Image (cartoon, rainbow, N blue to C red; front, side):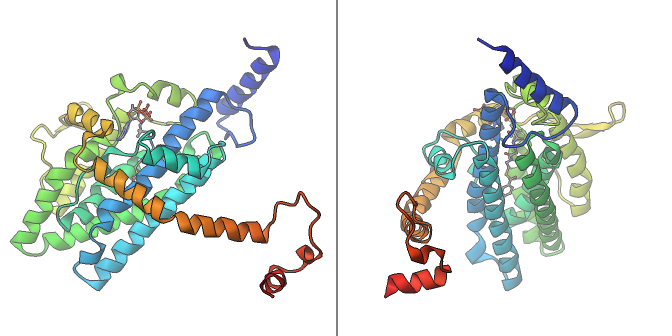
Length: 334
Ligand code: BYC
């Protein structure tokens, strides 16, 4: 049952959206808007964190110190993106602990792309070029998403993703100038990642249950198919510049539409991967769960330290509480 007050709140929310202003954490919002945001931002955060694994796989085997340093920095950036996004999600009232639990128990999803293995070093370049490329197509419009903390986190993330994409392209371009074996490695890697990259944008619009409402709320700014098309159009000239062939015989410029025509990925494979049956799903989640469990002592130590620094002051604070933390620490030690 809705009351006149509920209707006023809803009208205020809709007016904010109509003015293209942001919804902020303290603003009233419909419960379904909140839940949709938690779902999407959490999935996004989990993707960044799980996405560290396939590339992290090559840190110890990067072919030079320079490549190792670049890869380390990139994987570290992904951790940072995950943290901004978890923080954005926390402003909606779901804690990081709950989000992590939902990831490792399989209740929340992460991007299908990270359930594919990285079989050769060329995959590091291909992930940068195609996966970060797809991420940029999807995420640049999200800088204008209607929820303030999400949009603001996307601005910095997109800057770093653009840099990642360029480093991937540069790596592949270097390999393409190398030996026949290196060129073959790049082509084989692109053949494996092209279709999963197209799947990153989600199911076709006609089968996307969330798009219409998310567009109406300004959470999503473009549909899945619009972004997929943009990605294909962007990738074709880049593939030409690299000298690789995209593995789609139907890929052709359509003068009338002003876009490339292209074949659809295998949507049955997508459904299977999202349902947990991809080549690396079990491994990725098990690895994350193990890392989380191994980190228990760090969380306990941090909580114990915080409790000592900021005791929950039901009782009157001790006289030393007004002293600087360093002096308090000395008193406790003595
Ligand atoms: N994988 O109604 P739809 C990165 C799910 S990180 C798995 O179209 P929506 C990077 C979808 O959740 C990249 N699941 O949904 C990191 C929904 O299921 P539920 C991550 C997918 O939300 C490290 C169902 O299918 N980027 O770039 O309107 C290194 C129906 O879909 C996928 C983001 O998360 C998928 N690919 O649209 C390098 C961007 N696609 O939840 C790079 C933010 C769909 O109803 N997210 N599903 O059970 C979005 O823009 C949107 O959530 C999506 C899906 C376009 C992905």
